[in-house]
Image (cartoon, rainbow, N blue to C red; front, side):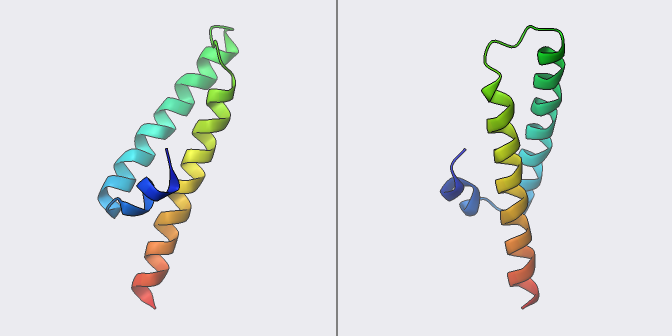
Length: 66
């Protein structure tokens, strides 16, 4: 997911997407632990997406208070 796409989302959409990405990360870690994950880089990509979403949520929170 691109940072430009994330910045255009509403906070409610970001929260929903964050929840989905965390579930995806859980599933990927589980698959990795039982050696069924084809591409382990998906874990890294998902973690980066989660970090991007959290960053944008924090930016929006701070800009709303300022």
